[in-house]
Image (tube, rainbow, N blue to C red; front, side, top):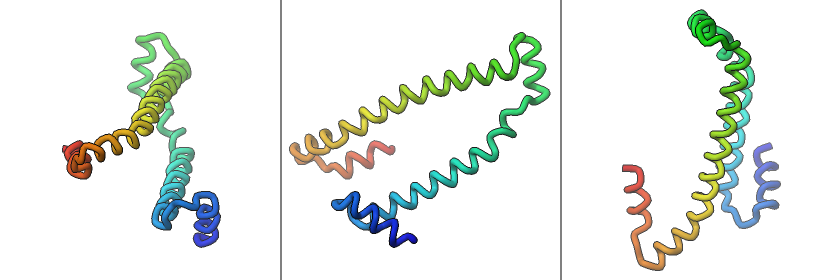
Length: 115
């Protein structure tokens, strides 16, 4: 089956090298496993604990209202984060060609970003 998926993706992405197609398939599989694990184990994490019950009594809020408030915040944060990451990703190719035109050692510049 792996060969069929590679051939199908190679037809869609003809300029991609074989290692990149294989990596794409592996990362897609890892994402699917992570989403499945998240689906089965998240509900236990969101149950009300005794400590949380004490805090809820003090704040006069329900568990469901706090969860809805947190989910609203989470989606607001993720939407802004994704837009910023997309903008950074889109400028990456332009920065690469700019650095290349100035004969900068791009690999050294990339590695120093991790220090």
